[in-house]
Length: 327
Image 1 (cartoon, one colour):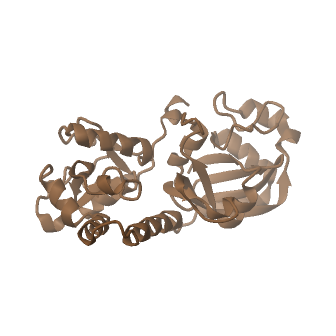
Image 2 (cartoon, helix red, strand yellow):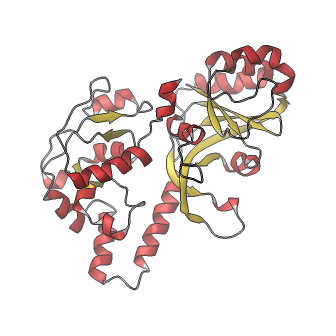
Image 3 (cartoon, helix red, strand yellow):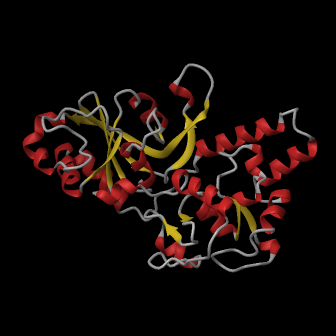
């Protein structure tokens, strides 16, 4: 379990009632932003302190890992932001009966603020530039003590639960269904091409045949029987153009379980074939799937075209924030 702080002045009403956090992937100028990038490292069971209008008003328990999703519909008047893709985490929020104002407790909190990526200024005022940031355990313990029995019960209740049900990435499903409907309704596409693009979503058809001219087995398990393999997109089908959806160099042959890990960002690949394991991946599950998290395999080099798509995957799908390495 880890602890996080989210500033929700403008989004509190939507996110708390809707049960999620959502952020862009980058700033408007496309620069990296640690307070968006931290979304990639939230795990089910993590605790989120919700700060809005000078108060900690709610506590959330993460119910999913981060996943790609469009900007939520309720953030504007009409229509969904299908072209504005960011990070979303499903959260079970609990609004507090007795919220606290951190600025009234800075004698306790100030010495516990981290030197980098602090959620508050030294005087207890919020930081407009911060969306989501990590909370050190000592600071989290102090906040829980200040919030009292209600917070203790919420956090302890989830900590001792045998299993926290994980939400099903609703925003991702809605986005993929929308993208599929666009393809199916595109009268400019020949029927054969439309069908090929639809089948490519499931790693089958023409796309799989093209991938098989480059790849010959699952890079992790070594399985080489076609019927046991799926052609997995490096740049996900949901993100790609129609041309990219059928490009063989945008694919790897993977068994279904490894395809799941790759598609949801629990693993990735360096250009030389070194497997990258996300810090939020479940180690025991990876072990059972044939990946040793402490010594992931090196699977061989990729083509120049594959490297371009794999770079996209590392930047936009892999659940790992380079900013946390600096803490």
